[in-house]
Length: 259
Image (tube, rainbow, N blue to C red; front, side, top):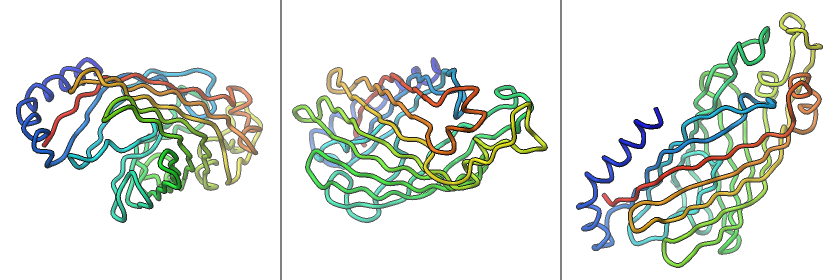
């Protein structure tokens, strides 16, 4: 799967190479960045082990404008109000959230993967400080409401060069969200003591992302992320038997072109 993504990425860049030069020279149209790589994420929320997955990347912005700052854990979205990268903006957002298989915790209910649809609000109180909040509803999978708050310090190199983002995170889950991943029912306990996680903040942490150009067209993107499960969720037998410390990281090759 990853090999296919890299082949597709290289083919797309080759096809778009000539039009991209013309577009960038005119500083019109839009810039597009696509990418593919691998990442290591927790096997499921509260797991002590990880799994390897595919890391896809996509971004687009108006030609002639600087590439917008993006943190590694934010959802895909676009501004309907305001403009990304300055002042105040808001718009729809969506992401894909992995679930939990029956083999991960035998005896506990399987949680399917979900598309999370919602919206974001973003503000730049300082030129190098971005604040962002998201609220999303799961479609399929956990079928619940969840949200995030993030603050990122943003450092840019000259032009569209190196970009580094780093900052703290806070994650919230509704009663249904936290119950789906962290509660244990009497009828489906799998040897765990029954437990009700309840709604509220379920983790805090930090994330950092780095974009590194490799010439005008290709580049590298990498990220690291740490989350600490907290509050009532941290007392869940699922977490106690696994780990409250959740680590993620990824590396991808990116390609930029104009349309």
